[in-house]
Length: 462
Image (cartoon, rainbow, N blue to C red; front, side, top):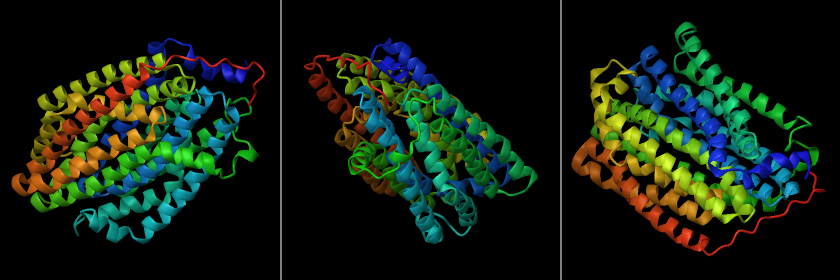
């Protein structure tokens, strides 16, 4: 076996728990750093600009989700396909995946930027902006859209770098991004007086630095998977596989965009601009714990994908079990903290008592079903990790389209803002039941499959 191969193939031989720790801890550290950045960034905006600025930032969430949908489709799809191809020891195709991840991110990133800048005001008004909040939302999104290609390339390549056996490096890059961001944001907001534009500028500049580091990694001749001139060609088969596998996270983020539009408009109707700001705070707080689970999922993804590609099904089942247990612990702790300390969590963002009260109410309602959310998130990611795109899409879209959206259209008419917030835990309960049923069926199929380790060819080279 070549030296280049020795690192990724440990995914098929190493202790599952040790591998999950090795791959999850860096991912969790990186995701937590990102989540904390989002929280602290909103704290800077709330304390350094205004309470309405938080509401304006919340208005941009659907646009951010839609942008993230395209980025996740390419990044997560490319990362999963990378793991599967390495498990199959198809290293030529692995290189083609890398090249197509770059090309797709550039094309979609530019397209999203141009359309977003042209139609920015109509989009923001449709997403729940008012005359009071749109100046903040517009100022923020103009900067973010200009740097959209940078964001897509950084996130997509960082996913592939992690999947190709470099979880620690991927973690360091993400943490570096957050540190730069947190250093620049208060400087731009409080010293340069750039307001909410300062927060957006800090985000893009930090991601630009990270992109430079990631590109340097893939141009290193000693790197297992690296840029080569011939890989930058559109490959229909590779693109189809990337988009197919990435459709689940795409649907998740695209549906989140639609859901956030409905939430913002419902809150605007029943509670006003501050209610939208309260949801923005609640979402930021819950995202901290969701990021923990997402970090576990990122740790699971290369292990599950590699072993599925290598037909080591018992190892696939084991990593799934370990990840579900850890994720359930995380979301249960989140439930306890949110129910017992809501005032102190809300007070971090603002001194406005009305906004604090709305945030406390929303937070306590939204976390009602959180103990089972971890299971649902892991199950959806598991199907994506083993290339089962249809199942992953079903789980990703059903919660939003068939469960949450009808609840958002019905409950607020009877219960106002409480109905908006209550729609979320109710949809979590229903989607978790569906996830359980689909996973049980898949595990029955797995139990009939025998492990078939793939023997490595010592002469195989990249």
